[in-house]
Image (tube, rainbow over all chains, first blue to last red; front, top):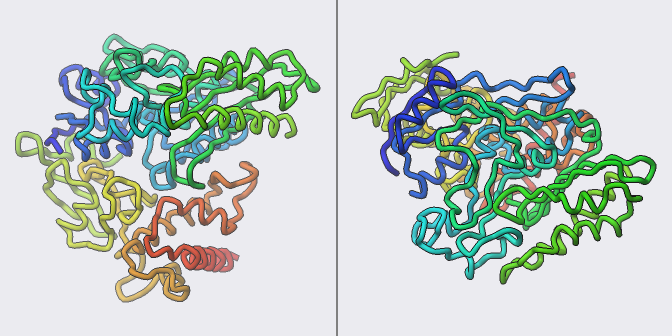
Length: 327
Length: 188
């Protein structure tokens, strides 16, 4: 591991200024991804700016019925928060389906969103990876790509975004509050992540040094009827083979509103707008849910080993929505 | 909050820091390369070899300790970041020469074979039981708003971050279950 200097910024502006002044500095949150990647030699910062003592660790219920989640709120605290459990069960379920108890106690809200989009080839410095080393090639494209993308991948990168939290926040139209050198800005989470294209090393639309300070959830009463369904190769402590975040608002059996987002299918959390469109305004049935998922996945291009993700994603869409309709 | 910027005194071109933190109730002062994890600080600098280095990547759980009372994987925490904080390892779960109820239950239920993962299992279970006492739900909790009932399925899910190569899992579940029941009985 490369030697690094360590800073504890006094406030948000100080943190952003430190990153601006140090071209190879990195922010440190809970460290569950960054420290691992530093040990592997995949990330080599020469300065760490420790964010965990900034006063960004509270969850605030907003007058409009929404929620503001500070960037350093730990995943475990967020999952246990009464307002999250009551008003946004999809969020609590996504958090609880992720990682392990110890890691949830460490991982922060902002850090979870900015964990690297990655695959096992990215983590192996002995393999070609355009994300780790632009222009070096992609060992995953024709390698063991069972876990990788089926939608929106490029010849340069087929990695998937691993966060469960980000999938739930994508379904909820969360707004990411950031601080840049020239002040604060709001970014809809649906505009936060990039497709891999020819620059898979760029994972978000944020400029380097931008600091996430909070995530704001708009009020969404329908989210009281919401869930997160995650399928894994083992029962616990594994990344998703497929996942879906779902909010369903029924008027009788008519779909008044629906929010769907998929995990484990693309380089970013995948908002299923086309599936939502197929469902909205129609009487709900499991068959309609299956048709909606098929419409969303119509442009999927499975890799050699991951064709199973299409029927899997369709199946969990049907199951999640059918369970919500019956609840 | 303890440990402002002035407490992390840096030396050696800024690549090392003086760290003051509490370990099992005793204040410790170390000057460490910033790359030193809490796990290495405990094992290599303080002679506390209870916490084990298994995968060293946050996957196996054998390095689990309590940081400010909460279970974490000490292999993924840089020691410089815990300046001013408190760490409890397996050596601090009970008074010297004594066993906590959890440790006694592990022995009574034969909840280990080689014992390598056991310090991590014990610290993780201690932290987990506190999480249950606070009403935290898990991935297998049916009703997110109801008080968590510690079924075997709940114990297994909540302990998923600790691997046991000897596969003593059924006995670990039994030991944790008994400890939790005893704790509830004591609370009544």
